[in-house]
Length: 122
Image (cartoon, rainbow, N blue to C red):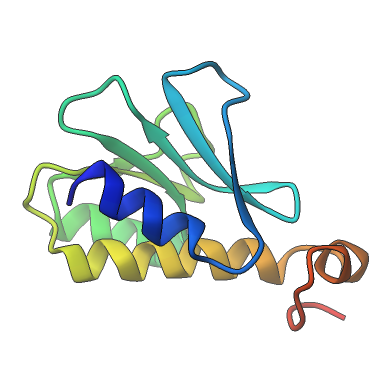
């Protein structure tokens, strides 16, 4: 998966915005002010950090050698995916969807409303 395809998919999520709070080398995608994806732009191949369910995170790390505990993140709740072609694009997109959904679900009701979102915890 290339950067443009990934970036387009990330930013196509409802109310998703990009930010560079850690400098120009790390693209951060947020929803409701909370991060759901980080892309290490200086790495080749690209590295992608995504929030994940802890049980799924462990299974993904076992199944794919390119999936590792989240670099500079809570290793129980974040994975780093090295986009070297060994993880199918469909699986990467599913991981993005899960990360986005987990973050939206954990937003406060006020944050969801402010971002134009519905669902999640009430």
